[in-house]
Image 1 (cartoon, rainbow, N blue to C red):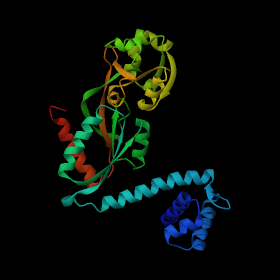
Image 2 (image 1 turned 135 degrees about the vertical axis):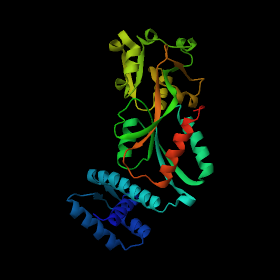
Image 3 (image 1 turned 90 degrees about the vertical axis):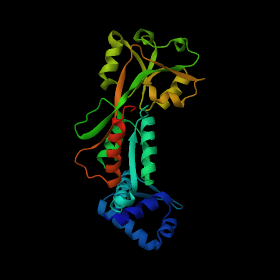
Image 4 (image 1 turned 180 degrees about the vertical axis):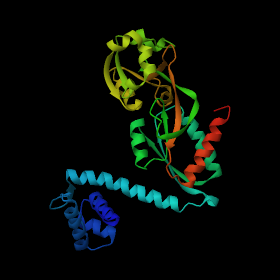
Length: 296
């Protein structure tokens, strides 16, 4: 399977038409058709469902498209990294981030780093720890920002000093909104919306104590912004971390911390023994210095 043919395949998948794709690629239609037919023969599967006006992807074609996009992105990223020069540092750094309060510190870090290296650009991908780790292992993410706990055995990391505090999102008009802190007893009979990975958090389980096995879990959600929508519809109370509260309309939903306080540390992490581009190496060194300062 040639890299050039993968690009042909992606162009056809995007244009949904052989003629349009051949014009974009500046090759003849018969040549493009032959290349695609050869690709299907090499793989032993049909990639396209060919209609009279447009073509669509089969299930096998959808899978190849997903993998081909990852391959092309990785090749483009590698080529850009090889062209970087330390004396005039450029390139792109891809971050995988959760919706955390520590993101504010990372933004401060990026602002200062940008002043020193103005030609470096950034790609911010938001997702859960599992998705970020998977993409990092594929070489699609350079540095992750996630809340502990998670298995760090394959990663180098540097921790943030502040805690990501757990709390509850509720409707602004809810009677519990008058409380400064929310106890386990307050939530014992309430429909709850949990983060998808909550069973991995021993501190959160211990906080609920005797109530944990009797909780009414209405839903789980991998990102708290979606959970807030369920809360606003009156479907439950969302357990989430403090960092995302700044982006909601407090006339609709509010955040109240758990009492007693439950918090986790966040960390920047990257794969061990993985070759890093000059820009990524520079940023990691900068981040270690930045986070060692007393204010952080």
